[in-house]
Length: 436
Image (spheres, rainbow, N blue to C red):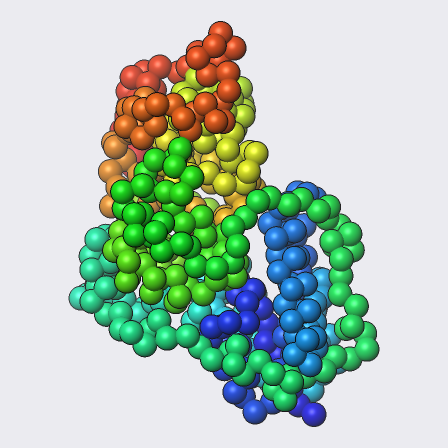
């Protein structure tokens, strides 16, 4: 019997899943699949908390599939090799999945589509992790917008209630629509099989944030000491354990500021899809050859939260200990590295990519290039934030700082590793000389 495969990636849920809903309506029994991609995993530390998070949710999906009367496949390897074997093991009519806009993902999906075509199967990808993608929102000249305000205005003018309508994947997820496993697929790889150790980090439940948090978001979002000031759902958006449609509809109904912040996510994914080179170089050609400094001691002080600037240090220690960093602290920490220390944004982006449990390439690259003044978004390179002013404005009572930097205010806390004015003037001078 021919089957359809549904390939989970950044959509670790059965509820309101666009590609899964399409697969379940294909007329063929559906076999859900997750691939532990060796190409990605070999770059991760052996105790990566994100893999524990993914593993637990994959196991949950497998258990729920079994309870519904179907089979769930989890395999480990390089994606083309895994699909080559799957296409031999099963009579596959089509491979369904949801779109991914990162450079590696688009190359990988092109390769899988070619394998499917060679085997006589279709490859079908659906929009699921954003509301608008690729070329759906362009300027009047047919170009991708590089001004967020204009993009957000166009986004909100275009969105309709049906854009938030849940896809019927959960309702269709029942025995008569599911395929059974071949014997060899009944055993799924363990974390040990994958070469990883269990490393759990505290994450909120995979459900919509409390309505009260959302209602007050615009007033509380900038204060890192307020643990209920933000939604704390970024990890679930990253791995698709919550539907983007549900959370954006809630934001639209309750708080336009939160909706606008969520639109940034669509915006950055659109930009990365159009300009994949920004994953490894500045968008602005004039900013690609700046004389960035190399100072291992100062860089290490930054990574460890020992810069002598309390808001920066608190943020970096929160990141190192929890895998999360409040957005206001991210701004302070990133700005300090690229401006006061004048180090390459790419090394900061890479450090965040290793530590953030909610790491999202498009958001991370977009925001780092914004802070560095090198990106597509109109952010002037001469904008330099003062970490001291940021501290006074957003953590005036030092509640956040004292939570993560207990020695603050004692002789054990280090002096600043660079004077703000000196660092600021140096950055401005070196950027002026380096722009071409």
